[in-house]
Image (cartoon, rainbow over all chains, first blue to last red; front, side, top):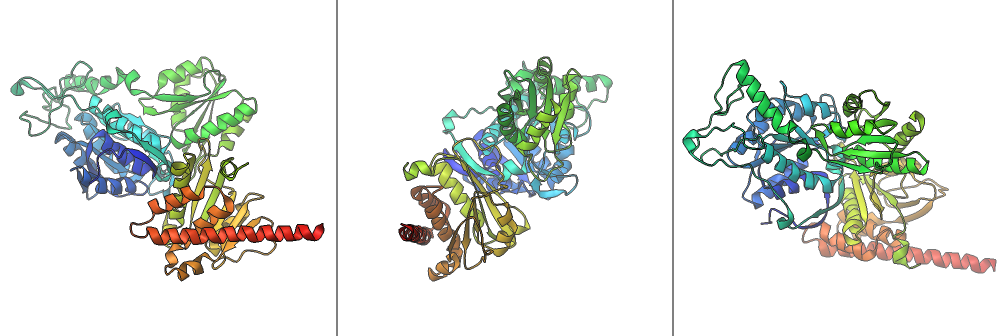
Length: 381
Length: 202
């Protein structure tokens, strides 16, 4: 039997590092359905959860997988699933149920080329808008994008911590390249890993309201079997959890599930930068594309182009302020992503027409070569 | 400059290619791990992934560097290791000028008149002599370590024993050494030949 935190230095894939990050965060339930290129996460969890008295279920499909993850969370466990495009599509309805019922959990999407079955074994970043708006109705979501196997280890812990703190499904939007790439991953000692668990209710059990917001806008959450009467529904509900079909209840519930995110942007949004301080052109990218963009920025600097990189670690909620501030001082933006312009549109929206914005996009199947970013930097500015 | 300084000079990009089932990806893992863990450098491994891993042509792309690797794909390898003819045919044109080609001569018949640095080893028949054709990849790794010095022998050997299935460490170490010895002998042969030629001129 191995411990939950496998302290040490490894040469491992992003998928395996993601699974190890989940275990280190305290995840003890995985419900999934195999799909390339995310299967290795399930495979690792199937082996490793048995070491830590956890539970692994392969469900009949991704709809069931997502439902099992929500159920496990209400059972008191930190729970997760991992999938890719087609499975992510199937999970969308129950991700919405998770948002509506304020259920903490983590969903990993190891993106491959789409639409439909697309390119199962080749990477892309084409599900970024689906991550934001894929489930019906209006809502807020948190999505993170790692750029290396080492980062996916830490970001998976962050994803669990944010999901527990704000009570919602948190998405890790990685890609086939990071998922299948092996690189050095250092797993620290267990005591140095900070984990967050959902706030537990106190006081009289008969007066408990499972959706009455606490000080940070988030309600404490009991687990099934702890003696609280719970009614959990995807219908519009009041603070007690009972369905109420009124405009007022809808307005109140929507405020609850959106404001807890909107009011804590500073805590949720993470960005990273490279040579951005004095940059005249801001390259905006994330995931594997941000990694190749670093090489492009370094090369551009050698050619006398003052470029810098803003790497988005949190994709949703979108780092609007960071882009707005940059728009006031740079000459222009270049967005780099493996799709034909998704986050690009967000950058465009936030820049508000102040400066020109160019896209280095790719339909999927490979990573973006730094040369194509350098070329854009030279031609556009 | 000592050997250890020499092999730590700069970024090296390697492709190992062969059939699925030959342990091509494992060879890539061992190589990458030796650099990342054994030598505390940076390395990435990207593998071709798909039906290839069930018997078709497959490849492992490894980058080794002293700095962070931003682009993990290998389009133009410094070192191309071929353990199948189809892999050779597909990738030989992509090799860098002045690159190093290493082949399993039992399986690959290269074109005549190659201008690149070229090494060959009968890895498959040597593996058969050791009783298991499956360890040809490890023999090849030993050979690669000896003739290219991209990683140290200690790091490579340690990575082999840590990465192969439990119970096969001894056999794999033996295979690694066999390949390594063959590599050293090949280098020695070259030196002699070079010295002989120099002698003829003077």
